[in-house]
Length: 531
Image (tube, rainbow, N blue to C red; front, side):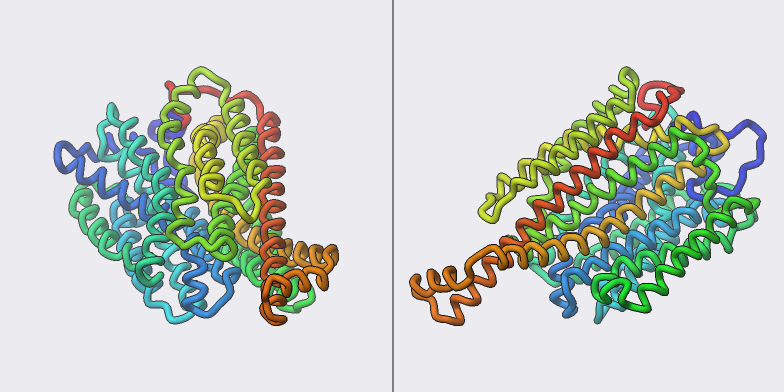
């Protein structure tokens, strides 16, 4: 929707809450790169985006290794994922202000450098608490890099090559989640988990240096713009309190704990204060007035439901494979990776279909197809083979682009030009927050359901008869008891996993039908313009 984002000629630009200035305008002001410099700049910017996306999934298969290495439970290990996602989401509203205050190139180079340094600190962390702190800093550094990498790509590529620039950026966004689980698994199985962070360091520092050398003469103009520090502070308070409550709730027995109750009160008060302040502030950090557009609000809800459910599956699947199915981190990564194979080929086809087919239908088919792959997994059993696990992951790749590619453009098509920037930033923010919240909720639900299923199985079975049969098979009393406990626990986890995927499928079905609440999208620009 680059054409929709263009501001009115001569109009002053308001402080952006999320996305840097229009890339076409920037390209016209600063000129374009050519030849080898263009290729190198394109590679550096794409690699930077790839690294940030990679770090959202590389830790997924590494959670059991990290938890074991730091002496914590696998459930606590998921904080490594949620802390990064929350921090990354919080800096999204600041990206536009940072780019206009300090310049897009300078902001990008500094963020890239800080990302590398924070990655090194993550690898050196001696405890989970320290690691979570450094992951927060890493997420704060990585947040601005995703929108800035896209903007700078469009800034240095000629207008006629803008589709190629967007294709480069989109491909790294799709390949990152594929490479993350495989790379994380290979590193954890062949070296220490710290290297999933150390590997970022040389690439981040080199990218930072090259980006500054190649693009510093094309820096964007800077402006002294106000920033809504009160709104940002309230955002950090209520989001942080909510995330900590979700992460710690199970360990502290939820609302039996005064600490959890205080977090809930902080969340509610902070959220209400945030709403009141942002609706009345002159330059809000998040422009909540975009919710007056029914189509945009519907698309945002669909994105939160579907992406949250999708990301929950991405987190729980490798945990289940490694902790209960005996998979190594590498093979857990290989089991997840096929989901991106067909997605890479489908993405450009979906972009062309958007010019001929109602995008709501594409989204509906995509989300319903993803729901089907979740229902497919409800038939998993303890003796499931690797190929049976991979099959729904592979088919899932057909439907992912049908959901991801058109939704962002459709949502923005309902907004007026002056609201595009705010709307795009809010979409990015809520998508990242959906991933963080769903991770915590999914881990708690999966663990609680596993325990409940185990108790239910014990109540339904004749334990004495089962123990007697195991003794007849030649096991001693203690060995028979251990074997029975292991079998019941394994079956309990399997039942919980099937129930988990069933719930994800139901959420996605609800999201699929919700898209029809939105009016027919407003089509502007050429084919693929929305993407």
